[in-house]
Length: 160
Image 1 (cartoon, rainbow, N blue to C red):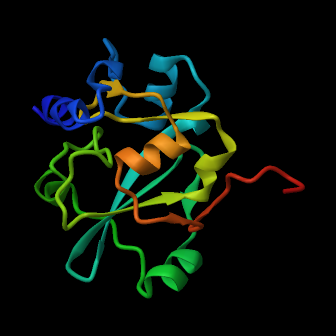
Image 2: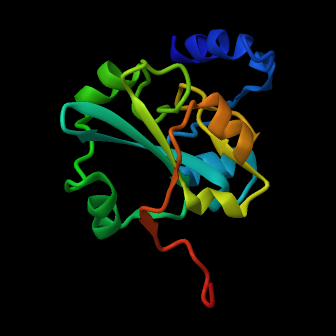
């Protein structure tokens, strides 16, 4: 059902047909990379957190990990991921298919700087076997992201 919700959402932009529904699971970065034939870092994973009483989604590169100190400095609180049972209720998408599209107005979406090194990235499309290829500018626009933030680690190459 979530894929259909996202398709409906994307109709306003005329890109509902860009979805890639995959025969194999894309529920993890590794599975998505394999199913799409791309490097895992280009998978735009959507991480769901609770900040105060609100749901916050952070879209980051597949090889990035939340840096607790940077997260706390930005959000003013310790990183607390949503419990599995809260994910669908608060985001409208199932675990493994969480994406920053067609979420409620109360959900705040942020994009991590780790994505900017790629021309295009592959976020989920609302299910554990779907994705869409977008530029970073398209991702920001279609996700109604608040802003780019820098709260991840382990993605920079040596010398950066």
